[in-house]
Image (spheres, rainbow, N blue to C red):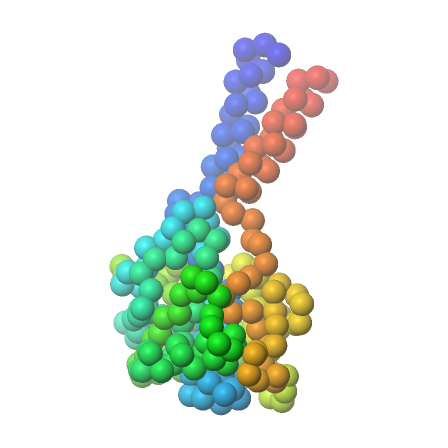
Length: 228
């Protein structure tokens, strides 16, 4: 391989690297239970899960949530959690009584105690209830920049009540429901009618992993071009 060929290969790798590495950590809305406020023992409390799929912790101080009005001006604060570690999934419950809501959530889904390290926060305010007929979850940072969003259609109307599962990390419309044994889904400890995977999702490729995959593909392609 001569100098010119090495430069061409390096350029190809650089392009691939830039294409897959985001400017900041990726945060996704990985699970939503819009039926929880009416069809759960956790009455009057919908909830959703946020997962950091990047290799670095994300500071979410000042971050807010809004439903399908998708308005930072109407968004409400996400309380109780300030940072999401790399690969961590956290829960946010709709409640004006955090201590009670968190205790009830843990009892419902996990029984005596939650998994070690599970973070559960809350949000409350007017106009942010999640509709079982279809709605959305939009997450904004403190500056009002949209960081994650999903929309969804109608929720289950009869048992079992399964959460919307977004382990695939999609943005926009999601439609997959949690299924036992898939992406870590299980039956709630104290309600056999509820299925979900709060606090965990199946592995989503991190930015670093995607970059390494792209680098490998680019390098292989370059070598093949050189050998011809």
